[in-house]
Amino acid sequence: MTTDSASPAQDPAPRMAPLSLPGDRELVLRVMPLPADVNANGDIFGGWIMAQVDLAGAVLPSRIAKGRIATVAVNQFIFKQPVSLGDLLSFYARITRIGNTSISVHVEVYAERNPANLHVVKVTEADLTYVAIDGQGQPRPLPKPL
Ligand SMILES: CC(C)(COP(=O)(O)OP(=O)(O)OC[C@H]1O[C@@H](n2cnc3c(N)ncnc32)[C@H](O)[C@@H]1OP(=O)(O)O)[C@@H](O)C(=O)NCCC(=O)NCCS
Image 1 (cartoon, protein in one colour):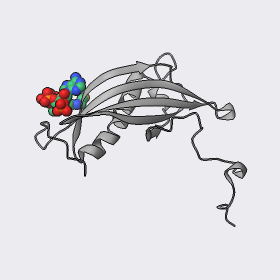
Image 2 (image 1 turned 30 degrees about the horizontal axis):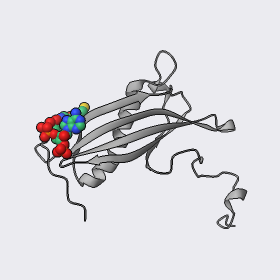
Image 3 (image 1 turned 90 degrees about the vertical axis):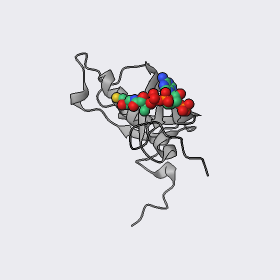
Image 4 (image 1 turned 60 degrees about the vertical axis):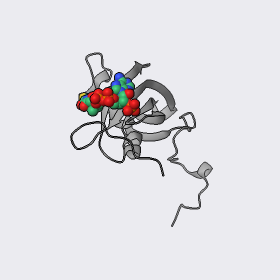
């Protein structure tokens, strides 16, 4: 038996992201924090979230640079809401600037919480800059778009 012909309305377990997540940027990472990532307040460590944002932010610049990149700057980082155990975090990225050797990206992080009565909260947003580097770790010009 196949369920391929079932309409989305009949699907008892929809796999689409909730409509309130942004559609104008690319989903680059999804992750759920673990108990080891909790701080003394019972929330998730800001440093853990920053590491995930750095990983997520690198996805689109890596694609454009077609090679090694390094994070040169975290230009802005805002923790808007605490992240809790059980939150499913989705990281959305949008390129904001392409320079000679550097690429800047805006990352927004949304938490899906309380699956029984799902709601989506923007928890973090950040602006980061990555530089394309050569084998010696020096800046290299970005490849020209085709
Ligand atoms: C990344 C690195 C190679 C850049 O070398 P650099 O000599 O500082 O490079 P430059 O000054 O020529 O700048 C390179 C690009 O970065 C941009 N840049 C530098 N500092 C920046 C900042 N604070 N914000 C935004 N962009 C910045 C420059 O504008 C330039 O972009 P462009 O070529 O598109 O105009 C070097 O700084 C480095 O190795 N840093 C450590 C990287 C690292 O370890 N990251 C992980 C952090 S734990």
